[in-house]
Length: 256
Ligand SMILES: NC(=O)c1ccc[n+]([C@@H]2O[C@H](COP(=O)([O-])OP(=O)(O)OC[C@H]3O[C@@H](n4cnc5c(N)ncnc54)[C@H](O)[C@@H]3O)[C@@H](O)[C@H]2O)c1
Image 1 (cartoon, rainbow, N blue to C red):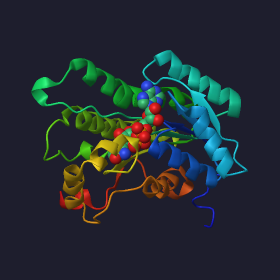
Image 2 (tube, rainbow, N blue to C red; image 1 turned 90 degrees about the horizontal axis):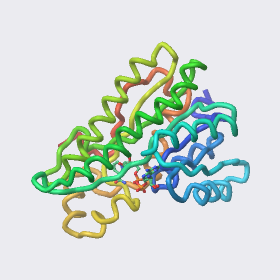
Image 3 (cartoon, rainbow, N blue to C red; image 1 turned 135 degrees about the vertical axis):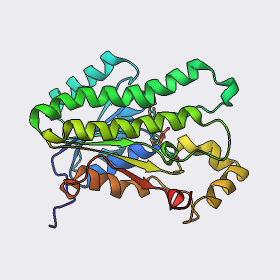
């Protein structure tokens, strides 16, 4: 039982791994024994170097790629397999949010958000899923959001919320399709977490006050608040858990 949460020698690919949450998840998985790939459109090598510096036993590597480019995603999968031999854990922690009033939403912004958040999640699942299906083994963890199930009292969130609801259904559908292959597919739905992604909200006293009023625990989350759930979903502790969205939200969805 002591090893229930260990991921020793498991190969974990963190997409968006140089981001605020991705970096914390990469470090957490490395600390619990995984071989970590930090995959990102920017900062991948720096992100991996940071993990190697913190955990001397880690052989984390950085791989730069662009999730909006289908060939680049396939090439990333090939690089991971040629470097580490396989993939056991896929974490989709990439994402962007572009807010506009519904009457003003530029379609190009809608498209890039869906390319990165939704199409990107499906592409990495497709490519790394090929390896997992063949081996009949795998753990997929998608970063969703409370916004996949709760609209905001303020304007401009249609695109982001819709993209996260799509990620929820990709998660449930893949959990069903890949259950015969012993691949667990789950998602994590955070509320506001202090990263570059949420900087504008956190710097605006009105927006911060509004968020804190919606959160029973009365504080902004930190990237470390996501790590335990990720290790759980990546480890044998979650072998009977699939198709779930786990809300790490300080209680926001409990009262919303
Ligand atoms: N921070 C929050 O408040 C919050 C709340 C709920 C959900 N989330 C979700 O968590 C995930 C991680 O968020 P974060 O706070 O770490 O954001 P972040 O902005 O710090 O990191 C996102 C990462 O995605 C990468 N990325 C963007 N475009 C890419 C592309 N084309 N190809 C490859 N990588 C690309 C970025 O370079 C960045 O490193 C996202 O899916 C986000 O929607 C965040």
